[in-house]
Image (cartoon, rainbow, N blue to C red; front, side, top):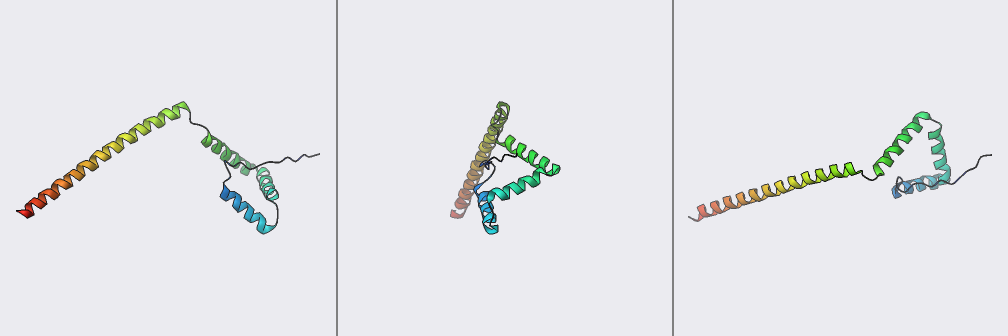
Length: 114
């Protein structure tokens, strides 16, 4: 005898937009969301290539959702420091350019007023 359990869709992997599209498809075709999802899952599980594909996608999703390791945090901190230094250099360049433009404008104005 087969027992059927209830499976829910993960909100982490399934957006509101996805849920709305699922509802629209099922409402337009007059069948339940559970039936539609079950048919999709059955199709994936019956094909080893598709099963492998979705196992890899799920693993990648889980890896992407995992908290950063200490090494990753240190690397991000170094990158952030580099970005802050680049931003500071760009701001200094901008101020120099602005100052140079102001000097040129003053020179031009004084030349015309002579």
